[in-house]
Structure formats: structure tokens, C-alpha cells
Image (cartoon, rainbow, N blue to C red; front, side):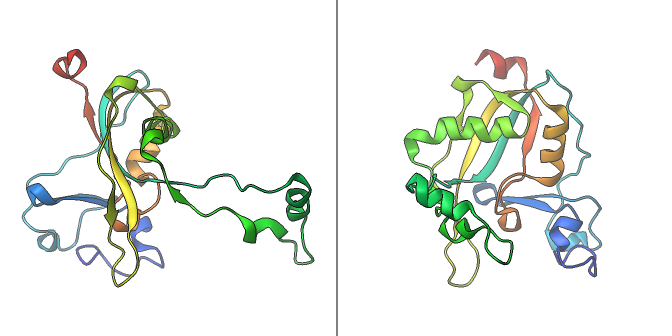
Length: 196
């Protein structure tokens, strides 16, 4: 954040459209923002920059994104208790809010379907045989707080909703965008890619 202008309000990352990803093996930081940095030297040696191209429906793309690997299972409550919790209290709030299930890590066997669903939500139809899911890792939150569990999702996918995909490219997707997750990286699929 120190490379960008200050005084943009209470949510500077969101206001500046700032998304980032670190590839530790390559010592490479990828940064995306809605405006150029004021002090680019703070980002390290710049190897290149480009403007995002807007996709169109039917385009075939290679996509890579790190996503928080969690889901909230349905709460297991008897129907009569569920109906009671759905009622509103004197303050107008639902009584059931305090009884929601807690997020859990998506089981490994469920991850291909979960990943396909995450990609579909941003306007992509992945080829099922192309989905690759990396090992579970944790994005550091700083201090002693526990990290966010995440996986890398790679796939070859067709753009089915250009507006939804353009939004995901611009604003990122999922939780943990303040911690290096959610930056959608993509490129047009090549003939080599589609035949592999």
C-alpha cells in the first residue's frame, strides 16, 4: 500500500482496486490496481506492465486463482427450532444469526466440484479434465492470528458471462483479498494448451 497514494478513505485496497499475488519460488510480486503507483520503486524492480483486456463470451482462457478453501455447511437443526430462529427479535434482527454454522475447510474429495463452482460464479465454464488444485496452504494474517486456508485453482475455461468475469478480473474474487488471495490471472488459451 505504501507505493500508492494515501488518504483514499477507510478501505484503501478496495478504493484503489489493489490486488496482489506473490510467487515465492520466482521471487515475483504481481500487482493490479486501478491507478499507477506514486512510488513504483517500493514494489521492487518492475519487469513490465499491461492493461487488462476485457473478455468476450465464448473466449477460451487459461485461468489461475488462489481462493480461500472454505465452505459453510448447513446447520443441522430440527425444523421447529429452525422456524423459531428464523423469527425476528424486538430489535428487528433474525434470532438465528448467532446459530449459523462455522466455516470448515473443503474436504479434498469435494474440491474439484467446489473449484468448478467457484469458477462458474465468476462467469467461467471450466473443462472438468483441466481443473488442477494445488495443496492446501495458509495466507498469513500477521501477528498470532491463524492464516486463511487456500488452494491454487488452475483450469482451461470458456467465458460464459463476460460481465461477471470482467468484474472478477477487476475486483478479484473470494475472501482474503487483503492477504494476497483472489487475483484472477488469465491469458488466452493457445492451440498447444487446447490439444494437451
